[in-house]
Image 1: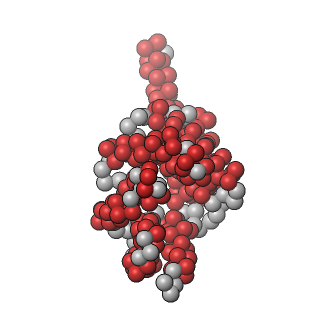
Image 2: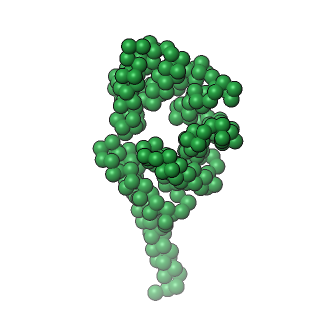
Image 3: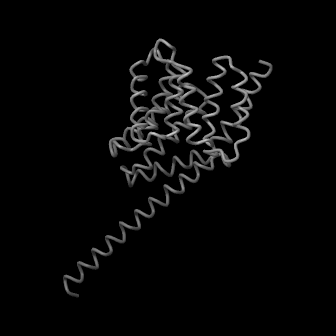
Length: 248
């Protein structure tokens, strides 16, 4: 066989192997994402999704999607972890994965978002006054996400929650929080957590009539998303808050 023809065959085989490996990686990631998005159907789906993505990183350590989705998954695991220590462990893993994603693509909206979300949750858990530097960084990351994607309702919800959580001396502002959340609902009326966030602000203002209105909105959404968050968290939380403010 002529040398030139042999080289073409070898090159073709190499390209085929690269293509097959890429398809395998994409297939695994799609499988992991599907599991995570259907975690309301099986509680084991979250852990299995993380396992698949971590396995993917063994062969594709710079896979951006795998990194920022793992950051999201560990944020979700932390949210339901039973102890403060376990929560912080998961939030820190989420921070680590998101930072790796940012190093690969500094313009990735979701890498920055999940870095901010994990950092913000960890800061809140430790105590805002003991982590003021982190509060400033959370604000910067939210602003960056909204600069990259001005209509990102996830980031708008996070921004509203910062105004809700912080005391007035540090920039907290309930009216500003309401304004942001109403703008986010106008952008995406099916993003269910927005109504929970808005109801919490009205409860803090002791405006229980408006709080009830938005909590009932959660229960009547026709196409809420993300569906897993709605089933596991948002709808149960709406019912719980309605019970808490009953008669007020």
